[in-house]
Image (cartoon, rainbow, N blue to C red; front, side):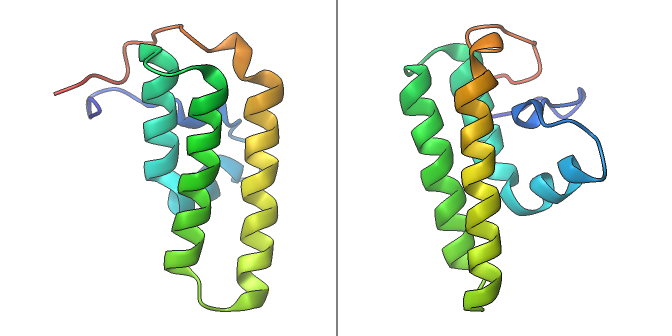
Length: 102
């Protein structure tokens, strides 16, 4: 789904304090799908954002068995969802040429 020769956007997460690296490590596939829907406009923005949240929650359930760890990850997933809802309008429908379909 992606073109490996170029740098991806990863939900437009800033590279401060290692924040992007953490999100990429934990939610890479969810952000890749989200960015694809944003660039190709295959779904409404609201639907693409809800799919992002659903995918992040599924990754949390699959990867983390500790209840304490899951709570923290859920908080960060909802924070990411809130950020894309608030600021995602600026990227919706804009193609960066970084994600291509096969």
